[in-house]
Length: 315
Ligand code: A2R
Image (tube, rainbow, N blue to C red; front, side, top):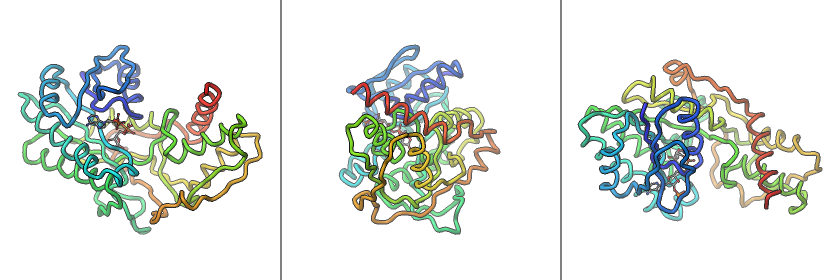
C-alpha cells in the first residue's frame, strides 16, 4: 500500500510513520513544513504547506498515493484563541485545498481526515459514552474548525463520491508529547523534582475531570485499520472507551517516584468551563475494524515518566 501522510512532523506523524513503515511494510511518503525536521529513513519526504493548493496538486500527481492520512493542523487549543484566523485557515481552508486537489485526480485515493473529540464540546452527563451522532457543542475555536473540517469532508464524500473517512480522536498520549498536555506535563514536573531542579511540589489543575486517554501507538493502529476496513463516508470515534480521572493519573505518576511530592492546585491551570467527563463510545470502530486497545494506560505512563527522566538528565 502506498500511503501519504500530510503533516508528518507532529506528535502523531512520528508514530504513524513507524507503524506503517516498520510494522506494516507500507510504502510511505510524508510531508512537513519547510522549517520542520522528520527522520526520513526509509520514506520519501516532501516540503508542503497545506495552504498552497498548487503544491498539493503537484505532490499528489507525483506520489499518486493509494491513501492519504491528513494530520496537518493548527492543533493547539490555546493558540486557537490567540490566532483564530490562522487556525481556521490551516484547519478549514487546508482541508478544502487537499480535497480539491484530490478531486482533480483521475482516480480516488482513500482519505482519512483526523478530527477531535473536542468537537463534541459541552457533553451532558446523560450523553456518556459519546456516540458519533451526538450533538456538537464545540467550546473553543480549535474544536469549531475541526467540526467544520469533518462537515466539509462529509459534503465532499456525498457530493463528489470521494472515498473519505472521518475520525474524532480523543486524548492520546505517549513519550514525545509536548508538556502543554496534562500527562506529559505531570511526568516532566516529577522528573525535574527527582533531578533536583524543581522544588518537590507538583502544580495541577482540575483533578476531578475524567478523560479518555489512549496510547498514540494504539491510535495510529486504529487509523491504519480504518484505512483498510473503514466504510467510505463514515465517521468514527477513536479512543479507549474508558474515562479516567486526572487524579488517578496523577496518583499513578506519583507512585512511580520515590520522592515525597506535595500536590498544589494552581488556579491558573483551571479552565473557565470544564466538562466533568468525556468518554468515547467506540463500538463502531471496534465492530468495523476489530480494533482493541493493546497498550495499558499504566505502561504508557511508565514510559512517559522514563522518557522525561532521560530528557531532563540530558539537559
Ligand atoms: O504547527 P507546526 O509548525 O507544529 O506544524 C504542524 C503542521 N502544520 C502544517 N502542515 C502543513 N501546512 C500547514 N499550513 C501547517 N500548519 C501546521 O501539522 C505539525 O507539524 C502538524 C500537526 O501536528 P501536531 O500539531 O503535532 O498534531 P498531532 O498531535 O500530531 O495531531 C495530528 C492530528 C491533528 O489534525 C490534530 O488536530 C488531531 O490529530 O488531533
